Structure formats: C-alpha cells, structure tokens
Image (cartoon, helix red, strand yellow):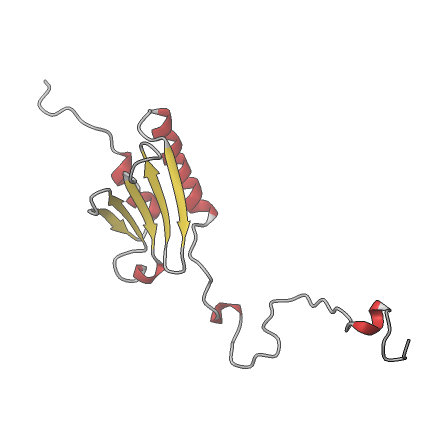
Amino acid sequence: MAESETTEPSRSRPALVVVAGSGHAGRGDQSGPSARAPAQVCFDRRELNLLFNLYGAKVAAGEWRDYALDFTPAKAVFSIFRRSSEAPLYRIEKNPELARKQGAYAVIAASGLVMRRGHDLSRVLRALDRGLRLVGAE
C-alpha cells in the first residue's frame, strides 16, 4: 500500500470542528440576530395558552372537535373544525406584516368573512367566546 493510500480515518478525512454560537461570526453585513428574518411565523406560548383555553372550553361544550396548526413564512394559522372531514369553522391568523396597520391577529369565518381583527389576541378571540343570547324573552 502506498503512503498516500491510507486507511486510517484521521488521515483520510479532515477533522470535524464543532462551533457553538449564533452562526453570525464572520458576516460583516448583518448587525445581530434580529437582522435575519425568521424562517416561519408561529404562535408564542402566551398565544397558544389563550387559543387552547378557548378551544378546551368549546370542546367541553360539544361545539368543536378538532384543530389544526399551520406555520408559513408569512403567517401562522389556528384552524377550528366541527368535524375533521369538513372545512374549518374558523381560522385564527397571526400575520406580523399587518401588525402596524390593522393588527396582527384576525378571526376568519368559514365563508371568508373577517369577524374581528386587532392587535391583542385576547380581544380578538372574544368574537368566538360570546354565547347566544335569547332575544325578546321576558
């Protein structure tokens, strides 16, 4: 076997180097971790807590049975279903591009009607939390 043809792994491959950090070292065009846009929009823990509290109450009341979470680079969607084989009854969308305009959160009905839009998720979810009222019963 020639000297250049070795079977030792240390000579046939370069050494593996593990570097801890944010991955921004050596890039002069970025000014920190906030300079790069996130890969996808998602709900944070507080938002998920609000969504699942409402969802749990409606499941206990027998109104809803299933949900779906969708995360894309543009928005995050929490879809609510009466049956999993149907189209969603409601969609709660988080769109950060609209945060300074109409508000990042929206509740959208199955027909596409925007029921409520706003900056605060708890206030937007009130559109779904209201119960039916009996009118004219005295």
